[in-house]
Structures are given as C-alpha cells and as structure tokens.
Image (cartoon, rainbow, N blue to C red):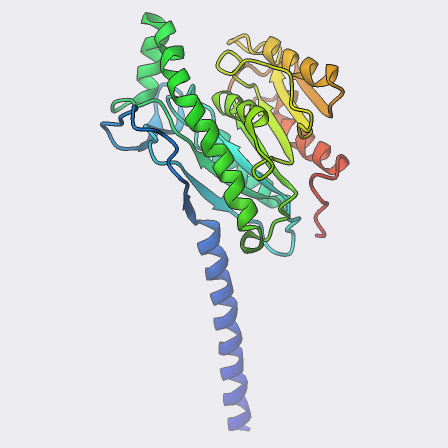
Amino acid sequence: MREKSRLKTLNTMKHLYLVALLLCTFTMISQEIIELPKEHTGELFWETPEKQYFSEVWKTEVVTNVSKPTMRVFLPESNVATKAAVVIAPGGGLYALSIENEGNAVAQWLNEKGVAAFVLKYHLVPTGEDGVQEITDLSISEPTKIMTEVSKVLPYSIQDGLNAITHIRENAKKYGVDPEKIGFMGFSAGGAVTMGIGYNYTKENRPNFLVPVYAWTDAQDVITPKKDVPPMFIVCASDDPLGLAKGSIDLYSSMFKANKSVSLMMYAKGGHGFGMNAQGLPSDTWIERFYDWGLSENLIPKSQK
C-alpha cells in the first residue's frame, strides 16, 4: 500500500511539474520581445537611450526615443485561441508611444478573446530625456518643426510595421496563428503607420485587415487604395480636438469609392487618444465593435470557449 501511495505521489508530482513547465513556456513566449530589422540609412541619430516612464503631461505610461524597433508578444490561452493575430502600433505623435493605454491594455483585451497580439515599438523621432514634453513645447513654439521631424522618421516606422507582419507570418506555427489572419491596428500616429502599411505592402507582408483608430491623416495623406487593399475598420470621434474626424471620413470615402470593404465607427464624443480609457461614453466600446466586425467578416474566428 505504501509503495502504491508513493508511486501515486510521484506521478502527481510529475504531472504538476509538466503543467508548470508548460505554463512557464507559455509565459516565456507571451513575454517574448522580438527585435526587428533596423531599416534606416544612418542619417538619423539617437543620442539618448530608449526610455519608458509615466508622463505627467499625458498621465499615462509612455516610451520615447525608440531607435531599435521591437515588439512584445501576447499570446492567448490555448483553450480560447482563435489563430487570429493583431499587430498594435500605439500613438504619440511619433515622439512617444502610449504603451499601456494604446498598447498593452489592447493586447490583453484581445487575448481574452483568443486573439494573439504583438505590441510594436516603432522608430520615433530622436528626442532628449522627455519626448512628451518636447512635442508639447514644440506644438506651441514651433508646430511646423514637428511635421518636419515626423516626415523623416515615418517611412522607417512604416517599414517596422511591415517587418512585424513578415516576422509573424514566417513564424506563424510558433505563435499558433493563421498566416492569413494577421491584422494591423494603430492609434493616432500609429494610425498613420497603419495607413502607410496599407499603401506600401507587398505580397509577403500584406496585412489581412487594417484598423486605423483616430489616424493622424495630417502625417499620412489619404490616397487611392491599392486594388487588393485588405478590409478596413476605421474608428474616430467627431469631437476629436486635433480635427482628425475629417481625415477618417476621407479615408472611409476613398475605400468606399473604390468599392473596397470598409466600416466606419464615428462617435459623437470621445475626443482624442481615448484608447482603452473608460470615459462613460459609447466610444468606450469601440474595441467590442471591432471584434464584432472581425467575426462578421470572418477575419477573427470565434473562440471555442
């Protein structure tokens, strides 16, 4: 009896060890940071290192001075995984990334729905110790300089996004995703990156859907979409203080006139940069509307849970 009890205990311990090992492996993949190729020619210089901190100006966690693009992997639990994936590009005027509100929090919400998420840190304008304060000051003293600096960096940021799609597609089996269900979602400046991806992809890095959220259309002009442009879900608020509602409408119109698959969620109120912040407004549910759209378009398979 004692021998049987001992064997049972050993088997139980072995089982628990294997479960722990699997959980550990899942956690490591979920927290994996992927380094992406650098796609700049050397005319841009970052004299200070990348920095993450809580911005008292924007009242949120931010990242600044990104010179080496990376993305953080968030994988859903296997029992809810849908094999769909979304690359997330936070906003911040290309001077910073609102890494929590428009990045990690979005990824965690998507994981709960069984969607793999990849939070992208793309090239930003070289700044000093506080990129948020720098763009805030420039918006008052030299607003035209912002666009000058942004125009230098945006092509590299777009290439970062394309490289992210390529990486996920080439490693789809590793991440447990369908290589034909990889979308790209971007907020504000990240929305400009999203648009740029929609205008510059190749067969290898074409996203399967695009989600520009209050996209910064002043940084990336709206142009005629490509013939094989993927379906697009556009989000914005009419009261956006940066005047981005018109750009989102123009983007929708360009897709509609070309007879392409497009949806527009234009909320009466929401302002700019709402991301995952709860404001007690209908715009709080924008991500649920995106998910519903993804299901209806068969871009996101329904979770089996």
